[in-house]
Length: 272
Ligand code: C5P
Image (cartoon, rainbow, N blue to C red; front, side, top):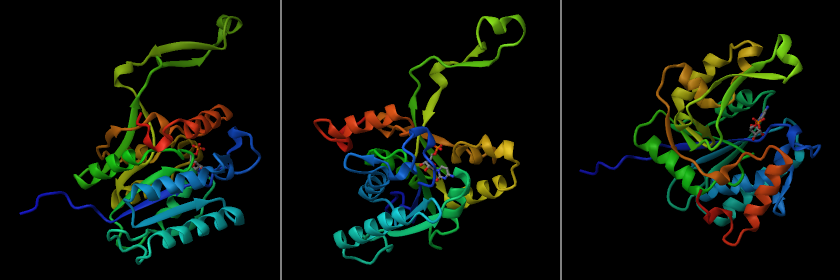
């Protein structure tokens, strides 16, 4: 008898509906040029190259015709490359590409995409378009952990900096420095968390249903999907991420991403 784990029917949600204000380009981050294409094009290519999804569901800023056209072009290119039936999941079959309007927060964008997944979907990976250069190996590590039975799995890398907690300085100290150190975290237990984050679909839907009733303060504190699953008490597993999965957030990140693309081997072959 074959005891190899079966790959669940998988969708990848790509959230690309952010404003990109911190990048300072005056346009949604997904459209910002990177290596002659856009950040979103690189992200979508990486997802497709990983070959793990029957569906790719992209959340874009509502009404953004340029990004809509970009996603349509990407879907057409996938069909031309793989002339099979989209979404059936067989070898060489292209994923179905679905486009949804994102929401005011990242979590709302994820919820909009969750509502648009194909009925047969069993597992979902949620990926930030801003992590446009994530290597295929990271998608594979996450999806293997799901196939092996994890309900939630995140890619993570060790933290190189010493991390401290602080609070605003009050009283006489305020004249010396704006913040006071309140503690030092044990670095060997810390991880910097990336995407794609993978979930059993029913578990992630349950986590987001619970979060839909959060007040503004609680909603603002939600920075990833795994956090919501942790609140349900479901174990979250961590696999190795990669340093080139950096989230392109500031102008310096964009310089690093351009540098990675120009590297001698090309970014997809450099493992971090
Ligand atoms: O803002 P932040 O850098 O945390 O965004 C992470 C990812 O979430 C980005 O890819 C961004 O496009 C996406 N996002 C979204 N909808 C929002 C806010 C962010 O899809 N309302």
